[in-house]
Image (cartoon, rainbow, N blue to C red; front, side, top):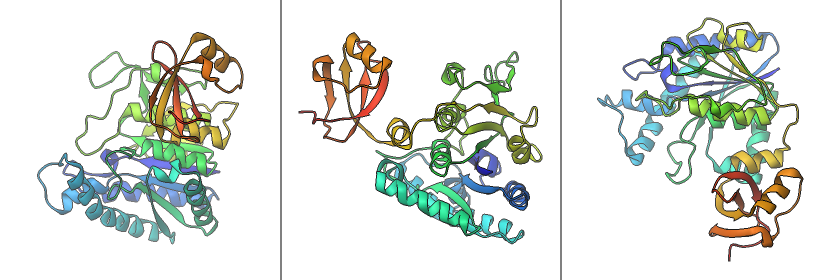
Length: 331
């Protein structure tokens, strides 16, 4: 099987912000076990900015983008060195891959990134992936690695996506503030994933949260990839999640009908450059069958987009219900 494992900043760093060697070691031990069972593993890791904060002995994480980018440059090499050391113990070779949104937005770049990842797997390497925070612009960046992990899982046709976090999995409410919150073991493919209340990160060392993990699970579901949200602190968590061990985390089942690579790219990866609002007749036609949107159904145009750009389609209440590639310019 092909597995993508994502570990967040709070799970891979100490309370002081230093890279947690024990956490990296435990993850790499599991990767080695999976490799011995002939599974292919890709790691998506956070922690570069936090590593930079610790290396420069800053008292707190800065908030301005330029400093964060500089800290990512400082911390990324230290983060990668930790993976090199831990994987080398198992005679495994790591391969650093730094991605930016354009690697998924631009179709040709997307295919190049995919081919590189697949070739690394063929060579027996363990790709260690992170967002290239040092050069990602403020206007176009992911901001967390959950969506990157889901898009990587799609691009390499992974079987399972495992998102490691501080919690056991998904709960009906935030268990830290609601004692009545109950653990959700399985989320069906047709469930409204985002209807479950989930908070954003309140951790000063990271940028993700349960909301971003739900978004990632939704992307993976449409990709035909099973997703598990589980605790990074659980012993053998990756192996248990892969083997569907009960109580190992929240499992999100994939949809039976997968989107094509092109449609998934438009839906979740392409940069949106504008939107159109349509009347009820056009909305119903688009929802019922595969048809092109005619200009007679458009009531409002927003943004400056060209032919081939990705745009959102909104109903009369302003709710986005579709995405597509424009066949005309905005003007």
